[in-house]
Length: 226
Image (tube, one colour):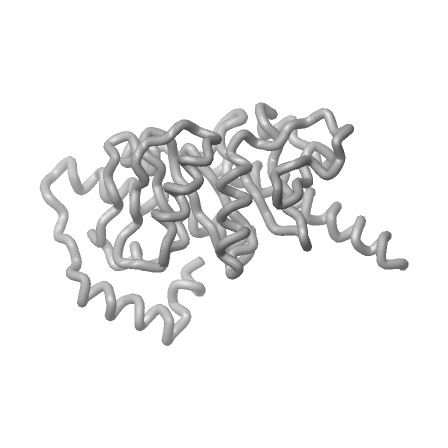
């Protein structure tokens, strides 16, 4: 197999993995229809889901290959990239440790984002996103550079964030890990909202969360949980 054929086969596999990931997110209730989007690093380029295509209509061929300037590599491809390509591009460009970005309109995280609230350290598993809390950005128009800039700020030292009046982003080294993190963050948001119905949840202190984060790093517990 020559290098070009090998590259084409590898790209086909990544394209298929994006379709499968989109289906998994819909089956898990984190997205529906054409909501949400996914991006992944592919060599010196980026593969993202297309704009306005329902999950069940996605095909490997409909995934859009972009350069770092946001331009389509195949200008003849009919599908357009997700309108959110900017934050996919910017996250992958500035966070070398990330290989994939998952954006969801999941019910609980979106409800919390519509309140403009961070997800605080009400449970130690909040540390799975890399810090003592999961931040929510201020509101900005979807697909805008302003939103991408706010996302980068909210993700500083984190692997997940909420976007006000919008949804959630989860990032990790691989697509599999990013999906698992998104599922975990959505579950945490659901528990937090349920706790708020009864009273004010106890919030772990910064020192207590620092102990959790250290234990995660030392034992690999957070990685194993995903």
